[in-house]
Length: 610
Image (cartoon, rainbow, N blue to C red; front, side, top):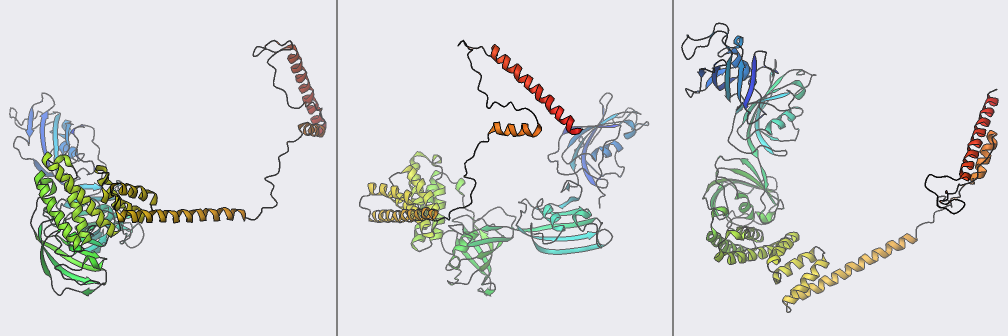
């Protein structure tokens, strides 16, 4: 096992210049005992002659750090590099070939005695070691890399295997194929380490964590104060998705329990074979005696809504468990489950085979038109059969085919616009039945942007407004509808209903306001209040007289002083800063009075002190 991390700085005699920075700074430099793979080119500083190169032969050099297999300066320099880094080291003789030199004189490999050499090194491969908390407390060493994929997030359930070994005590904790929820803290202090490490791993990764006591068992107890190593393997990530078809209301949740390494996924209209491994209801009642295989075209309504929504985006070989909170979502279709089952219903499925179909961005203008026509017809058939959720889903996919009309040729643009309009209107009708009124408003508004006189859009948006008690918004839509279609009985009836409901609302609000105002008049009268008493200004002349009498000094307060006049006694305008003789005499008398008062206060103070 590698030793503890050391802050290794270059000694005098070795100078480093980075010529290409590593792609990532999160991984630590190699340690003594690590196996590394490098390219190195050696030249003499004096003259620049090359005497060594791994690049000429095309094979990098592989060795263990610290075993003496390379120059000392080379070995020390590599311990300051990160994977992918290129650096140039200027190495003094005592860290290179010393006073004896190397090679036969005259040969390309000859290094004269006492030569300063330049080593250009690229670190190609080394153990991937990461300081997870950036304090040296937990160092992660990658042992195995799995296939590409996402990393677990807080709340995800994972399948892991782990083994905790304490220095001097052996294995103290271990488990294989355990289910662990990231962020749950279900394993105490060590959970913080697992959560941090799992957040940097992908499915199939294996790591070794070297943990200081502060991150495991602390400094007390049987294992206190000891370094722990944790072997951790991430086997599966149980992703959970809301696969409720038509309306995302968590009626069906899909938890992936086995991931696939393939890339092709199930898309709408693809032929797929699914194995239903088990079905249970109400926490344990088994509804399937043995596994069954179902072959169907996704989106055509051959199976129940739970399967229709959940197989989409799954890969061949992937397995999932469906949790269904709606008995309607599992009823009908080729699986044949009865209506009214006690929920939750759990269905374990696996995708056995699938046929790849062209995705939206693979279709040209005509291809989208053809698919749009077909999926619209299927959706209409499903709507008539009462499969409202699945019909809504297909209408949404149809409208999405024509989201950007600039993609279509001029001769196809008109039909594309019409297909999008019909799909949005029909989906709005589905959403009215499903109770998603905000979605109804959005869809109808999209249609009305292009066709302000569309009667169906006006009526359906108005109906959504009425359901949301937005009568002031519903009435203008209905009035506009009657301008477009004066004979619309439904529009006229809904308008009368909206006006009546608005009137009732206004009456209720008016009554509530009246009761509130009446309640204000019945509040008890407050007594003993002093905050409303008039404020009386004190008689300053009397106050000054009391103070003067108390301290035995004369009183010369003359009341508030008037603002200086801007003209003199003769009516001439006075310049700012200029004073007449009267002002000067008054100031002299005031100064004399102040002096007398000060002298009097001092005299009184001296007498009191005696």
